[in-house]
Length: 381
Image (cartoon, rainbow, N blue to C red; front, side, top):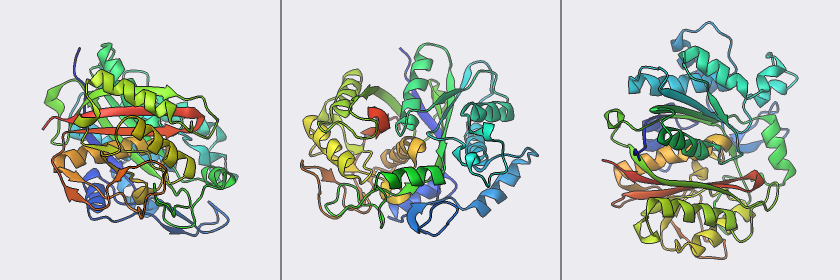
């Protein structure tokens, strides 16, 4: 069976408009979360991360398109254009397109929006991206709560293994919107400060926005210095609750176990874990239980939510790309916001950015509806 690799990539976030800039800020332990006072989004000031729309507008104008696109569409077009251009791949019938998102253009449903409400259909994103880049194949939209970003990598890998495509371009994104903020506020989950994953004094989640794009390929001619091989992947649903995870971590435990079986690795082979780590009581505790069941209590672990907040459907892909660069640089990035352990099981939280030889990392994500996804990724450099 052909090997599958993650290659050219792009992140647009509050920390910058390309992957290298974003990774440099994380290495310097700089957070993109700030106190936002925007009553069009939320009635009170809140901690989150938003992309600078003035910079976005200026950079998007370089694409020289006359179409009128939503903010999310502009971000996706800008991010994906960088990856397509860098890869130098001719778009033909061997090239697929996947879009992953949780809410898509949900903001067009606001009364103040200038766009038709029909733009809220997720298929709209597929149409926009296909037409702009002249993809020859039908785009796929993956929307499975907060695992969407890394679940899409699993989907792409399987399509390549089935010889449906040789290459797949993936773009993933979500916005900070009134709908999302009001939803998490109704759960009493929004933090009144910068989030602190796994910490005893954590008070909840921050919401952020980010767009990420990546090339997934079976051709080693299209690899980059930070490219990784997908060793194993799996998805499980714990069917516990519409918004709450299994208290035993059953879904996460099972999907990581399945990914490890496919990859033929043990806990001793994994150099670090890029975890979901939302800084909510139930998520952090569930992960701690699952990771201890997997014998990961001594594996270095971080959550990147202290840099971006939770970027919903894009979080898994954003954090996977940062993990790729972490392997390339042989650097463990600080789990920003961590103070003292606030879960019932031991975890080896990365408390300071440091150099360490790295080869394989585990990326996990968990989401509403009981979804859990895991990827095992190995450096090819």
